[in-house]
Image (tube, rainbow, N blue to C red):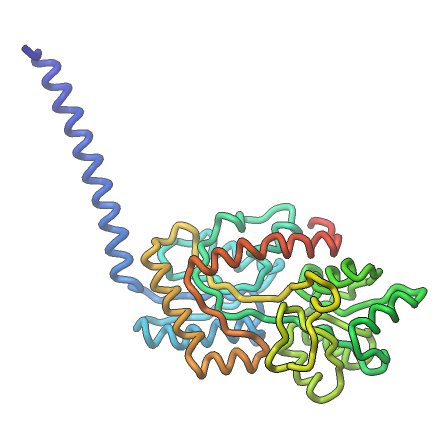
Length: 334
């Protein structure tokens, strides 16, 4: 016969188990309600760059269409500074409810961890990938007065020079900096990067002939190629680009060279999967709309889209590529 004390102990244990089960059920129900009701408040897309650049434009294209389809206000906020770390840190530490998103280039996802000693977030665990709105190919261009028309001629000219050649970059750690460093390492060249405050300034000096060449985003450079102010020698993608069908890939000369920019949409890591699927589906749908795809192409980029799983796999494949480029640039950690 069970004693009264043991009976009371069993009752207390059962009560604790029931209470724990109810709490778990309530938490799960709460998460499900959040996912089903999403979005129940305005959405904010953080762009860690100044307004007017490609990333900012992509964000505003997404925001306009998302606002219409999700029946909720979608705001684009520019939070530039510290190599995109300020904006990235804000999203990483925000409530994981899908209402604060980060749209950024490779910087805060795969580059900054190799450049900065201390980050306010862990790029490998802080974010959940949502979608890849666009890939942004780079193009190797030279000033006409340099007297070269192929990648081989450029490499030969630099190797024959007793002086170290300079190339223009959009800043220390920018994709243009890393693209040039990787090019130099693979070609066996000694190159000196000249950092500017953004692509517009660096390209201006290449067009003026003050710096002989650069490897930077196609969008802002394309008009100067078409006008003849710059000569395109190669593109950084594995395949030729439709917009520059006669320009070879750098890979055709330096086997294995592939380094292109991109823009990824992400949310805080613990965002419910149902909400991520909603955002991913919207992003994929929007970038494949003819008018949006055409606008992205006009900016020298390639519309991509895809699922959250596709984006996560892409991000994983990009990490070693950019790590190698940072090593080639030999950037002291800040």
